[in-house]
Image (cartoon, rainbow, N blue to C red; front, top):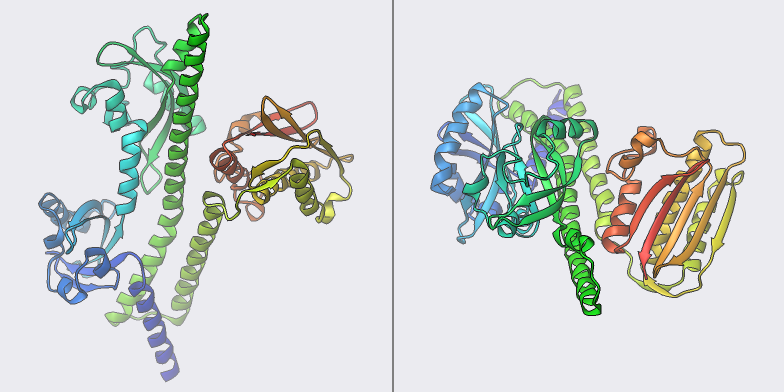
Amino acid sequence: MSSEIEKLQQSNNELREIINNSWDGIGIIDENSKFIYINNAFSPILGYPKEEILKNHFYIFMYDEFKEPFLNLIKSTLNDKYSNTLELTCKRKDGKNVYLYVTLSAMLNQKYFVINAIDITKQKSDDMILNEYVISAHFDLNGNYINVSDAFLYITSYSKENIIGKTYDSILAKNNNIIEFNEIKKAISAQNYFSHKVAFVKKDSSLLWVDAKIQPVHNKYGDTVGYTALMFDITQELLLRDKNITLSNEVSSAKSEIQQKDKILAEQTKLAVMAETLQLISHEWRQPLNIISIKAQKMELDLSFGNDISQEEMIENLLQIKQKADELSQTIEEFQSFIKLKDSKVLTSPKEIITKAVTIFSNSSDTHNIDFIKDIKSDIQISTYKNELATILVNILTNAKEAILRNNIKNGVIKLKEYVLNNNLVFEISDNGGGIQEDIMDKIFEPYFSTKDEKHGVGLGLYSCKIVVETHLNGSIEAKNHSSGATIKISLPI
């Protein structure tokens, strides 16, 4: 019996260590927000010593406009366990602002509440950058504007009062083929996004043409609560297309303008990719973090208040915490591998890249019955990420091999072709594995989309290839079918 008590005490100490070492602020408050307990993270988050925080109510550290909403949140948490989150701003001891995402959970006696405070200051800073430089708009479920970025207001010369609350088509050009918002919602529900070109009427009555991509916005339960549109200004491209430029100086000026515009679009695309990646990491972390926090808090509170908890339940909870911690670690590795390249640029040739990729690919025993054809046309020297580019080729070659094996192709053939076209280095990998289904062709480069069994892939292979090619190599990657299989084409500027 004493050994079991010792194990429980040891587990209790380990759980306290997990909570105390969490990067999130975890604590217990009463119905007036007076702190009863806090972990170690609350001190660096708020900038005050732990002893000083415990002497105060939580709302003391908040700006005035958040105090009443937070106290109301405490009351509402008793009646509605799903409406228990709030974003608020506190003032640190050093005078700086800290932005927090707070979650409340009522304890069994309903006199005390578990509080989980996540520091989202960096996320807010990133949001401010996106707000200033990326043209975007946000809609409710009925297609009414609920917010627009400062970049949108700057380029259209409107104020928020001119737009917020109005319908999606209120500032669109009337001669434009306006698509009803209900039709857009149907398209989004079918493929999770909607792309189209549309013209806005700016405040000075001129037109702003944009290439817009509209995506759904979900709450933490997966429900669609609105829509966000990311837009890229294509006005000048369309105007240049329609003009008949005859003089050489006009041609030179137009080319310079297009190059500058392409550079801006590329930077905006990188910002959009960064935002998408941050959102994915946040989404992939939130659920396991919540599970770890809830499991740890429940066990600590049960033990603290003398509630019975079996050894089997304790072990099961600890195993679940370990599993979720491993998932978080795996998520870090997956995204770190293509957000920050470990490789550095070196002077190399296409032949060296292909040789390295083929050597790695050929080590697999199931490639022996597949004919492999290399077609290397150029002999140039380029400065690029040799190892990363070879890894991308191996990834695509492996997908081609698996398509051949999966479809039981008897005379499997993979062809790797390299050539230079229009000052671009091009790699083409083709196979006779049956091709890609047309209904998923536009999804294969999306994150977490996979045609493989869950144990064989999580859907980040082609997505990571796309991110590295577009963001780090300034190139493009595309897929298409041919008569007997599929071709993946990578184009990189020399």
